[in-house]
Every structure is written in structure tokens, then in C-alpha cells.
Length: 367
Image 1 (tube, rainbow, N blue to C red):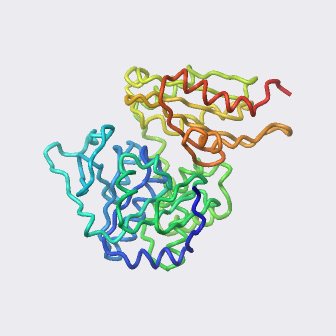
Image 2: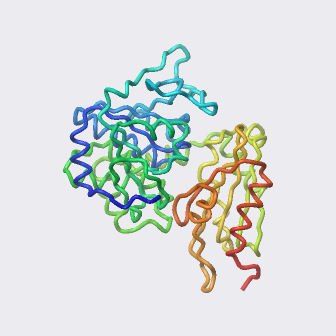
Image 3: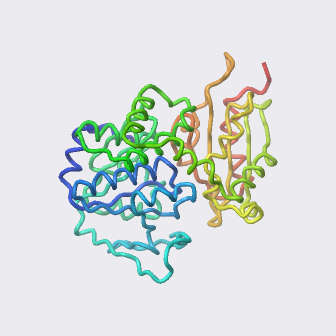
């Protein structure tokens, strides 16, 4: 179901001003836009006297760990618990390496909350393990998102599919209600915008992106320092995993479709983590002939995580593939050119099911 009653930037800003204690969530396996928007929203709210708590479902990927200096982020289970919430069998219990082993988790009482804010997603399947709890809680919920795929999960929505990033929507909210953007908040918003546009080279990069980014730089965001944090401090595991992706690359449909299969054993071989796969599905799009890139990642819980990417055809007459529509066929979603889904079964089975749909839309003969 797709909610259509999206509030205005100013209306959402005034709603946020009326709340005094809130909980902030984003999707599992958080990326730069999820974490940047969480950090920025936390800073914006706390600067106005709101007690805000960020709760994540997974450890923060290493490249984004510096955002913790902007806003504290606690992982559900080992670092924070919610009264009335019962962890499921798949609850992640891994704590980030920097967390003290002996520290008891903080406790959140839902009865004290004025609202819940869900950022950068509007689908329950990306909100495991908290999805069932969200379905049944009566706490007012606000969802801010720019993805095409969404469920009816909130009481208030700010949906802008034309926005390149959720961080860009938050920026427009702040401008609408004239809140202060300090240097750290500007940096967090810049991270969200820059990463969701592929550092300003994806097709969603438009004048709105550049105008906001320019303003955020004037307010203190340092592009060079942020790029250094994000892209020049990789772990050895991430570096070796990228090389493994290149070695495992398969091309189908006369080079129009790129496939990469990553069994869970590859992570131990490279000394990498699941978080190190971020953006690697984009690598095959460097090849001129490739229109669609698929990455299949085997996880410990029997789930195959599938990343789907497409690009605008370079040649006339070539199909323009909507990977969000393909992902939706498997309960996933995202954007026209960037989407994801989770399937159960084997890597081979997941590959067969997803590629069948893609191949139906791709040419089998080079021009």
C-alpha cells in the first residue's frame, strides 16, 4: 500500500516542535543517508530541548563510525532495550567493538514517548526486528522517506520521491521552519546527500542537490574531510572483498547483465564483514555494456540479500530497467536505479529467480 497524504515541510517541522521525547529509527544495514539523517535529526531535536534516542539494529559500519561523534547511536538489544519489546529469534546480538562489555543496556519506556520518527524507509521488511512492535504500538509515528516502495506504517508522512536523499528532505524541513544548522549537523546532512548520489555522479544528482550541498558547505560541512572519512580509510577486508567481487564477476545477456555471487565463506577469506559489501554492487556499472548489476550475498541466517542496480542506457534502443519493480516482486523495494530484496534459499536459487525477471527485459544480442 502506498500512502499518498504527505505533509508539507513546514507542517512536519511544527509537528516535531510539539514533541518532547522521541525515538529515532532507520532501516537495517544502515547506509550513509540512513545514518546521516539520523545524526542530523538527533542534533536538530536536541538543540531544541527534545530528548531524542537513536536506535539501530546493526553495528555502525566502520566508514560511518565518525558520525557517532555527532550523535550517539545505540544498538537494539545489547545497548538499549524497549519496555514491552520482545526480541525475536533473528535479533542481532553483536555489539560494536567500541562498546564496553559490562555496560548494562539503557531502558526506554514507551509510555514516556511523544513520537517515533522513521527515517529513510517506509517498509516493515526493512525494520526488522522492530516491525511487529511498530505495528502494534499506539505511539504517534512520523515517516520521512524518498523511496518509491512503502507501507502504511505511520500516522504522519513526509514523502518526496523526487528527493535524492532523505537527508535532503530533512534539510528542506529545517529551512521551512528556520531552525539553526550547526557545522556538525551540516556535515551529517552532507554525508547523507553525498553518499546517496554516489558523491554527486548518480542520475539523481540535480540542481536541488547542488544548491543544498553548497549551503551546507557554507554552514561548516567539509567535503574533503568527509570524503577522507568515507572513502580513504577502508579496512584491508573491504579492499580484498572488492578484489574478490572483480574475480567473481559474471556477464550475461551479451554483457548487459552483471552478476556477483558472494557466499558467506568469502567474508572469512577476506577478513571482511557484511557491512563491507556496501556500494560494491555498483562496481560492474563501470563496464560500458552493463545496464544492470546484481549482487547476491549469503548471510548466516539463511537469507540471501540481493542488491540491484541499473543505469540509463548509453545507446538508443536499449531498455531502461526499473530495478525497484523487480525487487518488489520479492518483497523488496527502493528506487528505479537502486533497490534491494531478501530471499530465502540457496544462492543458486536466488540467482535463478531474480535473473529470470531481469533477463526477460534485457537484449540477448549486441547492437
